[in-house]
Length: 543
Ligand code: VG1
Ligand code: CO
Image (cartoon, rainbow, N blue to C red; front, top):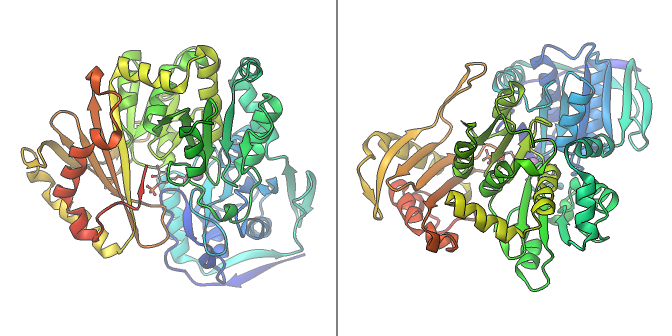
């Protein structure tokens, strides 16, 4: 087998976004596109020589082809070993776990996460560091610099590695170990949770539905819920990963997981419902007739830490992304622990978790996780909820109401305007940014602005600063609107408007979110001119 050095040129647009590099699948399949980026990862981390990496992906179209390219390039770049999931599959949290458990130098995850897959969908590549978490901004910055300077890449000429069977083989001088994608992850879950208590819940007749959305969590949820915990066969639906996610959009929210939502809001609803995304790091939680917003979910998990063996000694602290509602802040206050506010994207939690400052983290985009790995973790969140339900034997609706009665309710919604022309989205953000200083004291749709700024984050662990992380407007009375542009889309710009209103009046806790948020929705449009700039009179997706 020989190593070939291929001459290449920088390709525009290889800047990693919120979570790695995401592009349309067809773009990734263009000549040199994947190879340039993979070589730039190796160059950006100071070379692959002698290193060990984890490799896996969410099973979308091009997953296995891309995995073979990464293997040949890792071998040609002198890597000592790659640990790959069988069939090139690994959920993102399972990859994070393997990186940590096996003490590797990092890992490459092939996924565009919640973006649709298939030849006409999206693909993505992400590098995770040796702590198991998404590479921090200094590393993604070096990878991006490498994409702009690249002139050649190295690849081994070889046949495909057989990834279909567990075991150890070689590729050139590099060792390839193919592992069961589920086993180590399941063992970790058994360490964290009381599986006996969960088994007892199911054997007492508790019913649930887990929608894997034809994505990577199918094998994990089936092995853990139906296998280890004895949930009824059929608990996991859409449980076989498919290259185009069954033609669906593997984003677990009320819009894209409509099948599950309809079931949970109807007469045949089981006790509990959950869904996960393409790569298994997101979760949606829904009880019978009760949808749980991700922001509320984080707050409920934090408040009920004593229901899980791994956390019953107490939480070191909690962290949430800036646009996530402040429901968890109130729990932290009551528990007397720190609450950190970070920019959007899981990479910003890494330092807090590594330093032992935070135990639980969460994002409004259906991501919750803890210090057990360095990624958000969908199946983990489901097992955490099940632990609370097993311990309290209350319904989701009862738990939520009790939570709001003691902490107040942070009504919350996110409005997404997708595929907006980039110049129009930028004009909206620039226009709003330029007014920030003058907004306090002004009234919009009946609400008075109390404060307005552009969020910047100073990492309390390494002192790094991340600027321009979203525009936030606080109103008198506690309502808030946040504006930012997505960093995971592949077409045009996606404007995200995050809306929040805080309520403590016991007679108003059960209001419909649209009603409780009506004034802040109007105020957000009035001050940013959403309709005027985008030409849209309603969001494409509301979560
Ligand atoms: C979105 C979410 C963010 C999440 C990111 C990756 O980013 O808002 O909270 O961390 O996706 O999630 P953006 O920049 O589009 O708003 V995943 O599950 O797609 O890796
Ligand atoms: Co994801």
